[in-house]
Image (cartoon, rainbow, N blue to C red):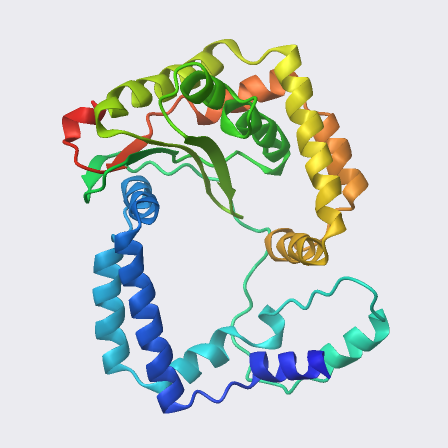
Length: 317
């Protein structure tokens, strides 16, 4: 019954006029909320500096103008073009009967077929847009973010990139955390993260600090990254990072939601699900030299730099 209801909602929405207008207003309020959150404004500014997307306030104005002109009919046409069964992935995890899930999914009402999104057919490329330095908004704290605008050059680099990110800023033993928080007490929150898509991605370093310390924190992020690029990682760092990532992968299987997310992400991005044993084998195969090579390939590029707070552009110079 639950799966039938879910399939009905996903495949045959009503698009009631009042419901659409109500949801439009909710989305506008969500966009406005992003203006109140320093972290969100920082992320938007970083994305704009890296790939040239419009900032949140411009997106909100564009959204309002477009949705005032186009009613539910436009939404339905968009839905029918993109949300047809060929573009949907059904994932279930837990104590379920596979046959019944397949039957329930196959029994959903047909919708007009639109273009099928290709999976795993993208060519790896480098974003060559000139990086910008930007300063946006006002806040007591001043988070700073640097975006490396270069994707890995193929799926084989992703496990090495995961280990590299874990060593740079992925945990309490990472270089950024130890250098900026533990040794100097310059920030409470400091980390790095990776976003990977089928044809692009980003490496982000983030720190929240006081306005008068932004320059020092920015310099430490740059210097710590440069040290990793120049000299690679130690054997101990490599061991700890691999062990953490392997343990995290195993622990994530204890939660049904995480299992479903893993399955869905694999199908959408790769067209197939890699068995956990294969994933762990590739992770264990990563060497310190692999980590050094991916750092040289991705982190040697000049990043886009942005900040939110009572700052001037020269604060990040």
